[in-house]
Amino acid sequence: MSETRRARAVGFNHVALEVGDIEEALSFYERILEFKLRGKSKDMAFIDLGDQFLALQKGRSQPSDGGRHFGLVVDDKNAARRALAEAGVEVLPGPFLDFRDPWGNRIEIVGYDSIQFSKAPNVLLGMGLSHLSKNAKAIKELTEKGMAPA
Image (spheres, rainbow, N blue to C red):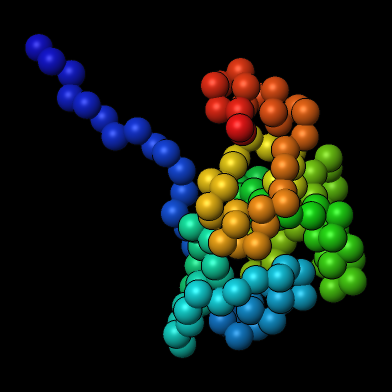
């Protein structure tokens, strides 16, 4: 008997967050992040992440997230930390740079240089981020998987 082939997960196209109000959400995230808007309607907005996007959808219906979160990769984690402080957003206790948006979505800010996640060189170029590189720990992790940058 042959085993049915399963699809292999290769990454994320987008993450969708429920928010109370699209305009308020865009205003909140603009205080913390520099981004381009991919598109917007009355009930949705799409923040461009190059070859991925963050979808904001009106209609938060559950309580604040506890441990459930996603890691949002940024080019400069320290700049994100400063922007959170300037916006008066509380950083959650612990070893990571986590915060909750006004609707309870928990987000961890992760620096591009220190993780395995990698954008293709042409995507970085198109985003104006071709200067980004990985630190030694991330390169070691990628090398061990046969995925080190050229």
